[in-house]
Image 1: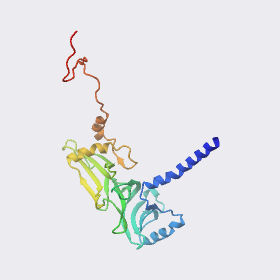
Image 2: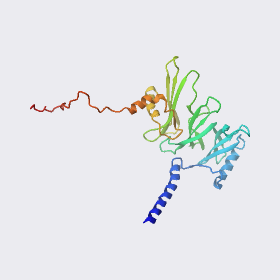
Image 3: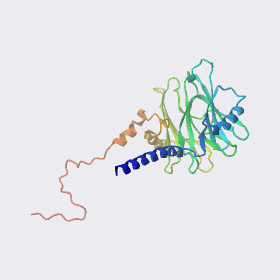
Length: 294
């Protein structure tokens, strides 16, 4: 009996070990995979991408992600041979694995992958990322997600405008106190979107300003949508932004702000169950007859 129990335990342990990777992989697009630079199976992709980018300026190819017939490529550039790796800048490319067509996407510093998002119901999840525009400056952090563009056969970035994507964290203008917040939220059907809240306090100069934005994807045609919330829409979205506490790392920031104090107070408020002081237990329900006096 003891031997059977031990075998059962080992079987369960092995099952968990093999189930974990499959569960993690299912969170993303099953057609996507990161290239293993030491794998013989991926050498043809590595050679193809290297040749396609041979005329470009880069120091190293850091990552290659393959989705259908396109590759999402991260190249880095070092300013000098003795410069620290932390000073590298990155460039994101989409390289077609059939035609060698290369499409520059984004450039910046401190690129970090966040999570897979369901931005469009019924479509594969999209890889989200954060990055900064510079290091020794007034840094702005941007948010984006990557999807396969079937018309162009490339991997494209979401919400690109003026060469950058969605700014989610920045530096306040001189003389202004800026409070900022962002979070990835979900609709009841599971479709996700990005929301941001900017609160500008001008001191005694004028009344503060609030700007609440929503960044999503049209469920019908897959086109990115950017909307400035009306005052009513913003008031409905603010408590949802403040409640985004348990999302994956990088998917929210700023929820510890004092802007969320009013919503936290409402959430912590409990209904009063103590009867009033003048309650003597003598009330009579409507329509009933009072008990006869003795």
